[in-house]
Amino acid sequence: MGHDEKFARLSRREAMALASAAGAAALINTSALAQGAPKKGGVLKVSANANPSSLDPQTGGAGSDHTMLFPMYDTLVEWDYETLKPKPGLAESWSFSDPQTLVMNIRSGVTFHDGTPLDAEAVKFNLERAKTEQRSNIKADLATVASVAVTGPQQVTLKLSQPDAALPGILSDRAGMMISPTAVKASGNIDRKPVGAGAYQFVSWTDNEKIVVKRYDKYWRANERHLDGIEFAIIPELATGVRSVIAGQNHVAYSLPARQKAVLKRASNINQASGPTVYCQQIYFNWGKPPFNDIRVRKAINHAVDRATFVKATLDGVGEPAYMNLPSSHWAYDADVAKLYPHDLDKARALLKEANIPQGFELDLVGYTDQDSIRREEILIEQFAKVGLKAKFTNGSIAEISAAFFGKDKKGVGLLSAWTGRPDPSLTYTLLYSKNSYFNAARADVPAGLPEALAATRASENIDARKKAFATVQRIVMENALACPLAFQFELDALSPKVKGFKPNLLGKPKYEGVWLES
Image (cartoon, rainbow, N blue to C red):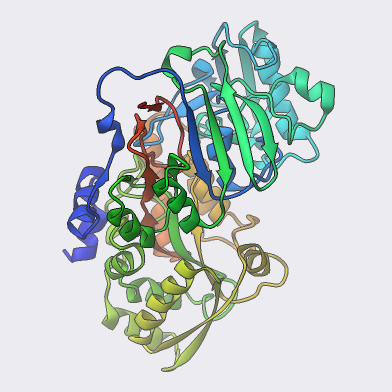
């Protein structure tokens, strides 16, 4: 077993230990620092790396919104920090009475920030709005929901068009964030006037400067939420955000690139937190265009990349080689699929020769202009050169290049980018590899058996049955080399020593549950 293959199968604890051995000194889960009983009070100051697209979870679209949405909006279903397995949230329980009927029992005594009760009628309103609101960006998330009925004061019954065991996981994301129906009916557009049922209620939003939320005293889990409020300072330049924590202006800077690790290491007044995430750096293939319409070329690329070296060189060891779209700590990870593409230059050269790809063939790839993307490109250019491929990247902004690659222009044959992940892996694989998915750049036909395999991941709520179904999906995707996963980027956060109770999570988007400030 090669070094990179062994790394790919590490547990969460082992991966973090190896990252430390590689030079990630002081990488810790800072929950261990929470000595004694949590203290009430204080305002947590967070350096946020992007202005929100919207504070309405249904109309927003940026993955960076979540860390500002989570404090204001509780979700019907929550997820375990380490595995992303669904667990009760605003829905204290749920069950499938048959494969196409999901019954959810809503927790009693919960109110929105405007005093509106969170009952079955409110949940029905939210789910129907998500499906029908013209500006909703989550219609696809609830595509299998045919109807929603109130079957009790605190009970809703969802009738589905087909079995969908992924729904509980989907309802732990934007689709499960509950908004006050009263607020929506009063103003229609709540993009800038959010009213949720989370631990903290909205105070103000100054564009590209600051978002302020304060403690909601009637929150149903008030004893588990300790802060008086949270202020998010919008600082897109991550290095500036880190400096603000070092200087004591902010308490937290999150989702940092690995190159900031050295800066944090030199700072004597900073703690670091790191852990695995589902955030996957990968090469998206347009498998409808040559040369990636040839499976042999796609397989050759997967054999040519040295994932362990890629992690070391681009993430400073703060990551894990990726052999599929799920990391080794995920409940649906399949160790056998991880063995499909060991680093093998001879195998890559043989596949390229069989596909009649000449030495020096130029790969027309696209990517982004930021410093970290350029570094990743440089490493791949070196690795592809070893099998006779000349990689040429055309770069631009994320918005520009993503639209050009996935949109009508079909620019490039491959895109070096990331997949930020979803709480339920069925949504990840459906969005990435369905025939008409936006992320299937060519909208090309998918391999035989994949639609049926994807449907099977939603056919049963039994976790063992789902894991088996995902093994089939992952094998089809990777045997057909529909993408080239490279690395899972660990969460890296800078924390003031005053911050206690902070925990990284597998989604890689910070929540502030249980966080308190030491005076």
